Image (cartoon, rainbow, N blue to C red; front, top):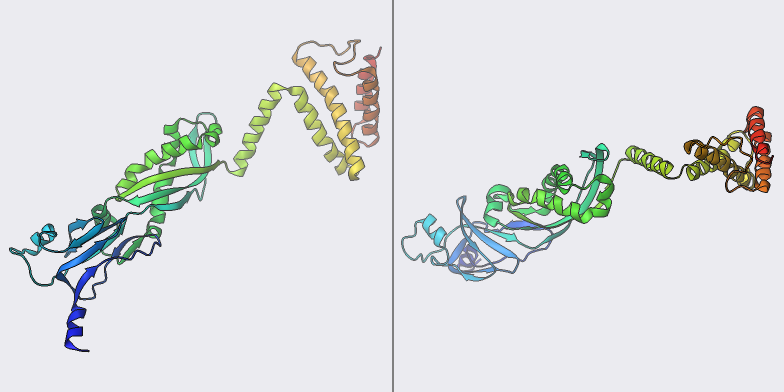
Length: 344
């Protein structure tokens, strides 16, 4: 190696970062014991910042553009180096580049259900997930408090911390939004806005800016979802007891017939379903009459909605249920007598 080549290797004329775009937030320029030439060129591309650090002390920060490095453009470094006049020799300093691009489609979610207080259900265990976008806002703060002297620092290194911040403020966001759980699914935008507002200060403490946050799903654990389904079912009962009883009877009778070894196959299921609907109608009429205080068990008129032909058809279906062993002789006799009174 010649003397000229050796000298060229010792000094740096151009300092730049060809950003790889792989989620790197901070990158230290590799000097490898080389020095920066007086008057060297610093190239900072759009969506980048460059920070000079001298022996651990943060100095000058450069935004996008092409900069010629002199004591005039490096005032803080000049002061730290105690240059009392224009320096004319190479110097050493650490240079860190930062990416200020948006880091998109970062995911967050609850690995375990989080217990929250809800005005409708009291305490609920909630699952939620979504994504968010973040960018570096304060390079000095980020260097001092987060990335430090590491050769590179990426979004992946921050992933656990950021998700933890989001989950930590999830319950606060629900409380601040004032949205009950049953309405969260229909108000995910408002929920996301409340969550973003709750976590923004914590992101700023890391030197970051939260640009966007979405809530893509809100749900309950399976066991609590079953309880919710039962509560919804009870609401249906309160609104229309007759339809609910008919539905329950139609659902239950085929299962009873199957467990008794009867009604197997498509034909058997169809027969059981028809019988269930008929029995459900009779039961619904009795329950509705009781709720209305009519006490019309012995009325000579047929139940509302049932003609004499339908009453006879119902008795035949009840007889079929009795033959299959689903109704006991006493149950069949009592119901048959009750229905026959309707025809007198």
